[in-house]
Amino acid sequence: MAKTFAEKLLARKAGLAEVEPGQIVTVKPEHLLTHDNTAAIIGKIESDLEKYGVASPELSVIVLDHVVPAANEKIATNHKKIREFVKKFNIKHFYDAGEGICHQVVIEKGHAVPGTIVVGSDSHTCSYGALGVFSTGVDRTEAAALMLTGETWLKVPQSIKISLSGDFPTGVSAKDLILQIIGDVRADGANYCSVEFHGELDKLSLDDRITISNMGVEMGAKIAIFPVDDLAANYLNSIGVEYTSYENIWSDPDANYLKEFEYDLSKISPVVSKPHTVDNVASVTEVLGTEIQQCFLGTCTNGRLRDFEVAASILKGKKITPSLRFIVLPASRSIFNEAIRRGYIETLSEAGAIVLPTGCGPCLGAHQGVLAPGEVCLSTANRNFKGRMGCKDAEIYLASPETVAVSALYGKITDPRSEL
Amino acid sequence: MSETNRVWKYGNDINTDMLFPGKYTYTCSTADEIIPHLLEDLDPDFANNVKSGDLILAGKNFGCGSSREQPALGLRAVGIDAVIAKSYARIFYRAAINQGLLLIECPQAVDAYREGDDVELNLDQGEIIIAGKTYTFPTLPEEILAIREAGGLLEYTRKKLEQKK
Image (cartoon, each protein chain N blue to C red):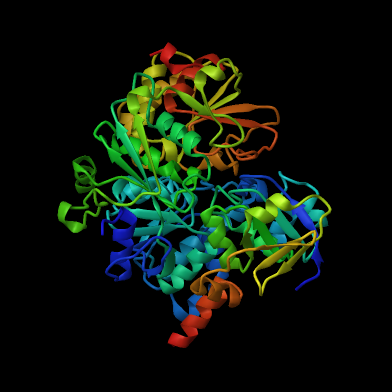
């Protein structure tokens, strides 16, 4: 019988001939991602770790990114505990503050290998679907149990097929596409599901695909997965994940889908998610002129080189409006370094941007760029929930890097097509 | 248990930032630290007035958003008997199982409830009785029930590790 990606992969990983949606299987993920929350995770199992140790020193990928550099003594102490844990249990894959946002680091360091399972104590772990990885978020307690046992259960998901064709018009990009999809599917429309992307994918760069997979969880998806084509395989090879080192799994042509959608990229236009839900999607033309006090370019959704290139090309030789704070934050050190070499950072700084160190920073309101009551932020992040950026009486609009960069010039939401 | 429970009623898409603000995620991880901030941006009265045995009723996609487990941990710690919602986001669903917090998926019961109605839970039979009318809900698969019955995932894991030894 024809099978979806999720059905094939989970059958293989569970050592079964075949599995069906709804079935519960036990799997041993190749990696477990944790970040600053590692401190709380190991705090739950201190005596168990003494007794049993970790299941494998190769399992954990730990990246300090959420509140870096530490914002206060408590967080600094947590970071210290994590470093001591890493040393004591000889954890092989540890990336300290400054290396980057965990999801970007997992990809750049070659831990996102096609056909493997990665679970992470972070909801945006679904990002590696861009590289054919069955990757999904879990909570801290499950991460703690995984550290001890190396295994967990997964329910075989039903699948949704999204077929893409065409190319984006000027001023429109992958962020507009995924926001449009979430607006159509709604915040729970893909709940528990595997979302597969099909069709003409050659117009989507790897950066674009990561933006799309990253936001899968905002429609409830368990995974948001792309096939591993030449573009993905060549990238992986360039970072040391060789062509022959993984199994390239993809769905059968006549597999069974719960729902199917088609999108022609040429018909997508700039959109925003209005406060306070991601699926509250509207055309940018409906919110033109909305006054904003802060713009934010960055995060695991849109902090990659492509996003910096777009913003720099829009802002080259220009100045943002003085009444606005424009925060830019690269998703990793390697992106930051390359953005420096290419002059993007200089361009953005000269335009008036505040360049923050790589990390999660303003996105979750823990520190850096917190909003005041009554303020409005236009952001490339993935969530606009009430209180998300540290203040329940502020508003967040989500948009593409194009829309954010152009709007920074005027201090109000602006259609990027007017400048491009 | 079969006495009447007090109900806190909320709408659709209640996300984890509303259940527990993200700004506290890296400074509050124990029950004592979490409880004062539970539902802070959704319902400021909740944390001070919630009592053991209370119920939460909510619409679709309860617990969507971040993977933070503080909402599940905190609701369990204050003694919420069960959350009854039309549907749940998947990470929250897992987090609740792992904390031993009971989640019931029963859209009919949520639609039927009117403020002031008596709500009674009958777990053994998989029944909710609202204003005298009975609604049924599906029980958990056996593999997952075992986690909840052990008192949560860590207790379940410890038992397994002990057996292996």
